Image 1 (cartoon, rainbow, N blue to C red):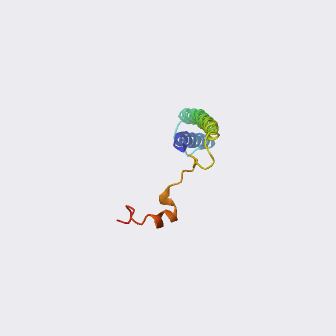
Image 2 (image 1 turned 90 degrees about the horizontal axis):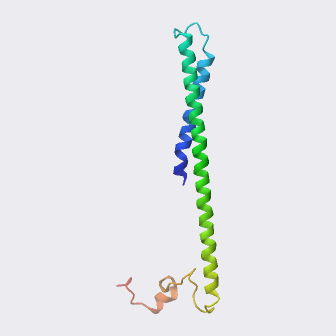
Image 3 (image 1 turned 60 degrees about the horizontal axis):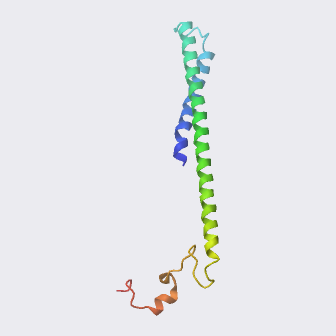
Length: 125
C-alpha cells in the first residue's frame, strides 16, 4: 500500500526544493557580483516558485486521493470480515460442539500422538 505514496512524496520534495531555490534566487537578487540581468533573475524566481508550488499542490492532492482510497479499501475489508463472521456465526449454531470448527482446523499430522499411532506415514518412507 505504501507504494502509492512514493510519487506524492517525491513531488513534495521536488516542489519544496524548487521553492527553496526560488527563495535563494530572491535573496541574491541585488548581488553586484551577478552578471545575470535583473529581469532574467525575476523570471527564474517566478518560474521556480510557480513550479514548486504546483508540484506541492499536486503532491497534496495525490496524497489525499491515495489516503482516501486506502481508507475505503480498509473499510471494505472490515465490512467483508463482518459479513463473513456474521454468516459463520449463523452456521456455528447448527454444528455440534464436538465437531472441529473451520476457523481452526485440526490436522492429524500436526498432533504428536498421530505420529506415534501411524508409524508408516509417507514422511517416514
